[in-house]
Image (cartoon, rainbow, N blue to C red):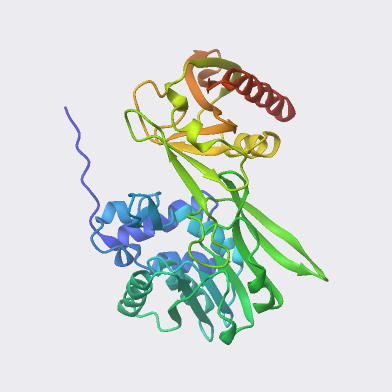
Length: 369
């Protein structure tokens, strides 16, 4: 007998279920943030998106550039919750947010800082600011204001702020906003480490310096158009499919040679390192980003012969005109099902680069055993 699942169409039930999932997973801990999630309709900030998609654990794109690449989205709920907990906002706080997107994050913040608090959320595109303003008004949020401005330059006319948060990624700390933070304030900033790997850092002033008080896994769309424009170049791979490589200015690579690198002979190696159900790849990514010559870059997309380690694509090490990307093969042993990590090298130096990546992965696993 075939069982069919009936879609949940009650927004209240979906909202409550989302909040409970985030509590159970540990992403939501504070009462104020939990209450904000339980009383804010996520779907109201995503007109045209079906209810189930609005409450799923996934980012939802809201704007693309002329090449079809996403340049604005509403973040996955777990990322939103993680940053809210990092921020530690209190009632009465003044908060500056860089990255208005749909206005959903500002609405959550508006509830947390009530009574007496105020939120200003910034974006660089007028259409995004207009949309966020409309959503906030329709949701009845009267203490959050969307403004068209460069988030990296801040909004000095309303400073100082008790909290400043970026929901867009940065290649470095935007120094202009540091003086806009009140004494005892906190800055939450998703910052790239090397290549495509980033973390959301929470900073507080420590005398004449700054200290990190929290660091969480998070990747965001980079800052655009302003004083800290985190310029990255997408290199489309020649041939069939839609594979493209994310490269940044600090990476010493030959972008023209990389365009056709997947058409060159491959070298496939396996590491003997096994991942189990629920294993976290983020720590391996972080380690490789720190020890490889050019960090680690995202390589999303699909094409014949491309066998990445995830459905969305893979992570790749780069060296000149060569790359080596992660792959997996499935197996089963006395402990159950596993996925063994492999590396596929392409390009003139692809074999050597692949060997280097394999060696580093084995070294990393030694340190955690």
